[in-house]
Image 1: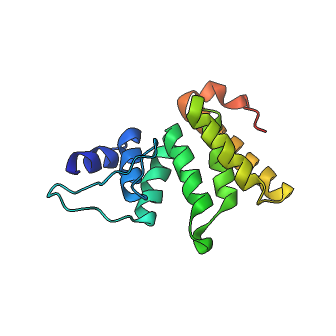
Image 2 (image 1 turned 90 degrees about the vertical axis):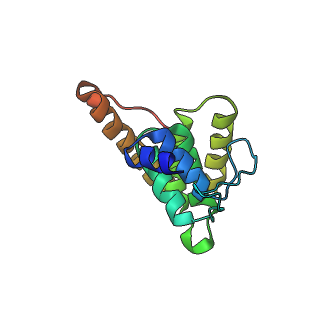
Length: 152
């Protein structure tokens, strides 16, 4: 756990993602229950705020599974913490990067949250996803910042 936390703190997207999953509901991408423990073997309690913190960091670093998992947390959280607009945004970003079953899962999540939003809210989520993509491209290649991805 110390190594994972250290790697996540250094900005390793995969470590950030794994730490977020551990703090989430302790179910991995394949639906398997995981029982994360600290370095002393003590179980780690689910902590939604920590899960979102680490998944958001990984998502911002471009980790597509983190983008999908973050969207799922925003979509399925307790009513007071649910944010369909943010979920929609991150599902859009994830769909563009995922393949296979993960892409289908993200598409299904997108379809579900989209049905909860008004057209204006969906358009705002699409705009935020495009803006995120532009920022990401600008960081990776300043010359590519002018082109724009198309989202549905």
